[in-house]
Amino acid sequence: DGGITQSPKYLFRKEGQNVTLSCEQNLNHDAMYWYRQDPGQGLRLIYYSQIVNDFQKGDIAEGYSVSREKKESFPLTVTSAQKNPTAFYLCASEDRGNEAFFGQGTRLTVV
Amino acid sequence: AQSVSQHNHHVILSEAASLELGCNYSYGGTVNLFWYVQYPGQHLQLLLKYFSGDPLVKGIKGFEAEFIKSKFSFNLRKPSVQWSDTAEYFCAVRVRDDKIIFGKGTRLHILP
Image (cartoon, rainbow over all chains, first blue to last red; front, side, top):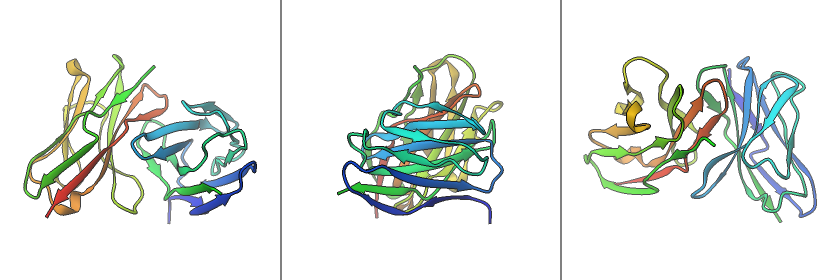
């Protein structure tokens, strides 16, 4: 079954801790994205990668980091420097020049 | 910087009413345009897309959108909405081969 898998679905983090959100795709897509969704704010781009070993900052990259060592995987680390990390995080992949396909999302809560 | 504006943040309609959701973008070159929908508890899915050709595009579930280049607009329409259309709708734009940028979304609530 082809698709995008985000894990975990729910994640709780203590303040001051880093946490990594997983995103895996088996669609053989070159491009992958991380968005943050907050009520009334839509989807805001955190990072995107158009090819392995390359990625670019989006509009709200501060406090986040990513890696793209494999085509299938694009993990997002939410660092302690992110001031307001509680949000819904969406990963997407795209076959270059086509539409994006989304995972089910990870809801991160800082406690 | 490129941006996408969705004019209606929250729309409430009765069943069988007609729907039009506005979307404008701020780039004058070649663009790819998308409308996505997020039903309650579900992941984002594509409603329709425009890359080139006929500016009136048809999507799933009876939705359509019209690309008007002179107005930098890509409005979503449906002649008769159903209760099951209750969802959040997002307009998105990709400029050339770059990243995809989303609008802030429109929450649509259909009264039965």
